Image 1 (cartoon, rainbow, N blue to C red):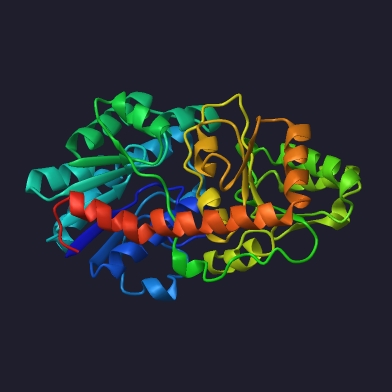
Image 2: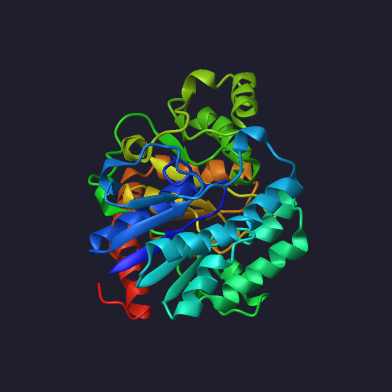
Length: 380
């Protein structure tokens, strides 16, 4: 079984530490585990290859010069220019039994190549990239981006979306996508959180505005009035870090909080098991389309979770079996939920154990890969 994995998004270093990078790596691992020979095509392969992925055949695509910081039009043009390179690279490395692509702006060649040659294909859509680019960055050549998206989705034999909101985005291009949420790698979480030491609020992720760490920090400030020994652990890095550190300093909480900075994937689990609860806050004034990796990883680590009541996240806590949900952007409500868990160790432990059992049984990357291959008619 030979699989071509294509990721032409210039913002995703396939062997990096960001969430999207981890997603790519875990799917590669899952395919390898099922005996596949995997060839990876990407313009971002500058990071060291993890030891357990050294069997992946890496085929770098010559893309943009990121050091040159091209303007949006030049960058879009460079991404469009990757399409013939992808087709040529697939031709050179063929045959394949499956072409699997992570949806990227301006990309259509991989899905069309597979369709023209009668090869099964899967297009994985993780976000409404056109709308996301317009809202958070700068989108040039919007018509070309929409055309490429339509071409890729129409050519794909299967389209999968990480959330119902992303599936709706696909429907706008005339494609019915099957919802396949994100997962976890059980091998990364061999032990459950011990919940020893001071009650520790945990956050995992990139420090960007939509993760609403502001609400978490404000809630932390309220919590310490009732629970002075409480601590805050933030695992990750991002453009909001300095501002968030300044806010903690102004609140006199610097000595109670710790930022780890960005960590390699294999160093995340030890940090999670230091937490007492995993938190996923999101704002209410923006479209929500995520399938947050952090939530599944909190659960795999045996943590109860607290989520914002937005985007259907409350469905992930199993009617309160795995955690609690609170209104978005409501520090007092979040502080009250945290105090509930801090003062009821038995309940907190039961939630964490149930969460771990559920996610390891129903949301493993290996299970996801097996399901996808079966639907593609490929024996694994």
